[in-house]
Image (tube, rainbow, N blue to C red; front, side, top):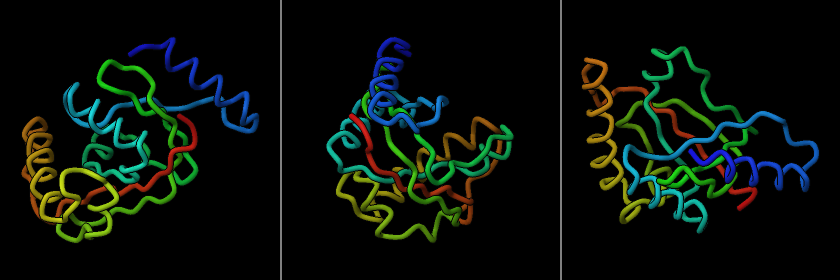
Length: 151
């Protein structure tokens, strides 16, 4: 993670937004450098305005769910800061109830629900294998919408 890049982006953002909190989270999408690069670019370009994550991992790690208004720095595959996003909505729903609209807002592939289900099932199955749990179509998914507030 390139702390200089992250700190520079955050401090520049805070100069223009003095009411912004001092704390932030910085993270990359996906499980590879290539995926992080691709998805960060989609965020910067305004194509990707949503994401989905495995609710079970939040529970196991005793981690708080994303909160509306929360600011996050999105990183590329090198750990460089690409953009700052603000969470607009968060809902937890079963995998098989994720909507076409959410799949489209994630901005990946052909933006269809079929594509979303295919790639996310593969991704979530890998996550569940690592924690020795079973993937189901009723698994809770954290569906988050966000907007770029600085890039």
